[in-house]
Image (cartoon, rainbow, N blue to C red):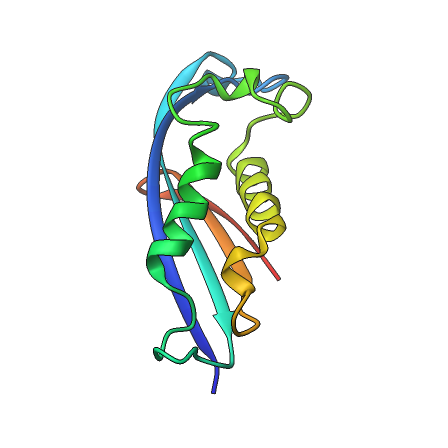
Length: 126
């Protein structure tokens, strides 16, 4: 069997797209929504792939670095454009570094999706 679980969190932050010709080159803000999906084949002794609480805590620690900030001023976005795609990649990479949710049954990160509005999102997956 294959299992997938997902958690969603939100944060508020501003950004401006460097080199972009249009409204988004000016500083503006969003309430960003982030979804992290973990997949695996084995449930733990409690019948869980990963405890939602644990995954939320890891994701919360990562997005806390961006919450109520100008994303352009937060590394690595001081050198790269803070697009939805780049933000999704950043969160994906940071989540992947944290092995805490894999310690019991080999679960692994499947995807991270970031919405900058209700109708616009970017996703990174394996």
